[in-house]
Length: 276
Image 1 (cartoon, rainbow, N blue to C red):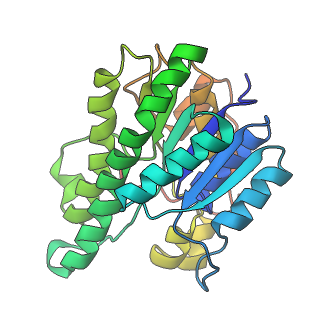
Image 2: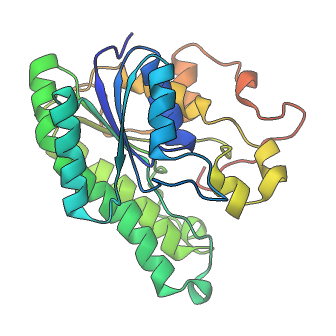
């Protein structure tokens, strides 16, 4: 298994899960377009597209930093064009960029509602739409092309919606893209899948919004999502599409069941993810 020479286009890749996926691919010598909004350092968010691209280079890949707001379809089109001009195409798209607000209906400002839907659902749709022509070419030329959305399994039960209707709608919108596009582009050999963690993952969202340092200690490292994504990318895209994967199940299928290395603090009980 190897992603050497493959080109990944990853949204929200300046830190967290997106960067981890890029770094895993970089170890094979992959090209990674770091597509994110953070061009300047901020107090609460570590890393920028430029520091992430430098990490990709240091890991053995080729990083391309592109400051992009995926709410802007013209900016997305320009980022795709720059990636193709630099690396010759796109083999893998990772729709990772996401906004979160775990607030109930009365406590969710419409500005926050619009942000979540613009980034999560619309951003995933726009970025997929822009990358699909190049993914089709990759599938035709190399027999492999993957889209991976970092979104939960679709489960239309009240319990998943009631605590935070707006956020669930926005994340499930990403998953609905998987459901529809997997069927739409099956003949083209472009795989569309979703990947979601079993437990909380140590990201800026967990630290800043979901519990701080205590929650971080009870989380797994982003590396578990990266290793699961890597395994999916190395499966035949014509045979591996339309699935809603869970990170530990993917690794178990690869023969890896000891996940202790991923724990931020092995002495602390892990927080289960909400959607599982």
